Image (cartoon, rainbow, N blue to C red; front, side, top):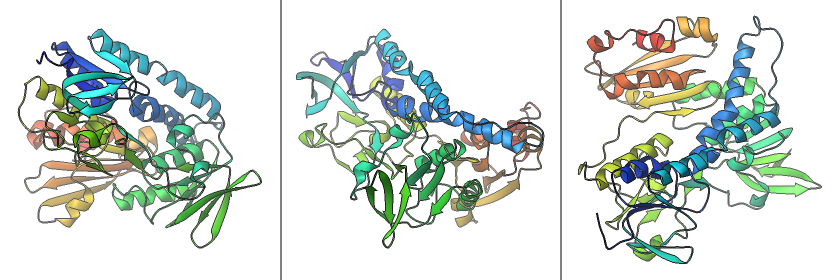
Length: 446
């Protein structure tokens, strides 16, 4: 551990790209500082995963009740105001809990804007702080469309803090945020129109499955405008308009700009020290090292070639902990990282995708299943939309899995050990699941 610097490792940003590795590193005796200008915990606890799933859980219950309307009497209704208040109560304690956890392990948590002065020094609150190694974990933020009237639109943070659900909501985008928030808003009683960039949604997933999601949302009243070419937001007599296509316009009460997320690379001094970055984020090598040898990047701000998800940030932060503690000198080797869209139904995948497998029939075999008649989905959830696909390599090893259903996220989780640990048929045959359960179905259909 270096003695000529104030800290052994200094992190800029206090999200999962930081604290999952910083805390165990501090426990090992390293002197650590974390600099954060906003809420401790970053996007995931405050404006992302935790907040979103708190709002979405009533939606899932609401949809399940509708699926069993021939059995369950009465009609549920989502109280949006109470839903938002519950979300706030659920996540309120998280920043303090994370900060207290770091401080209890001897980490100095410094509130303020950190900016690189040189490769070992940052300026924060007009004080210069030095560190042997610096980790940039500043994450992503919502992008704003560069069109006239952009100030009339709102972002994902605003949506999750709406005190009242507007009668009419327009959403620009067709990725995770657009589709998940459209699902929540529709179930909460809003008239939702989605202005798409192209003619596809959730491009990261198997398109025949995403088309089913789109059809499901359409059946619930969501309107889609394909290849909309949104070019202006305007306001006339207290009424908002989305202008698109060839001089077309639609009135609305509230606009969500869900046109992606961009890395937080501005005004942190990257140019001062020669750290290379572009619109995808900070360039890193196989050790998460930037173009400056003692400065690293972790989490969503890093252009690592991996999906910008919380599990990725956790894995990267933990890897850096091991690297700094000299518990490894090997390049980072990523596991299979699952991803999920919290739509209704959900869609989730891990490993080799269906598209990649079908493009290489000489390497992979795809087994597709209709789950609506299997034990769990038929008896326990009454799903009318439930399909999955298993991807095998030529040795018949399971290497990928995709599912669309209300339990797709849990189904993918149940198969992660088989894929990541490369369990053989003999090994999986020794594991007996609860019955009926999601695992008994997903394992039983392999």
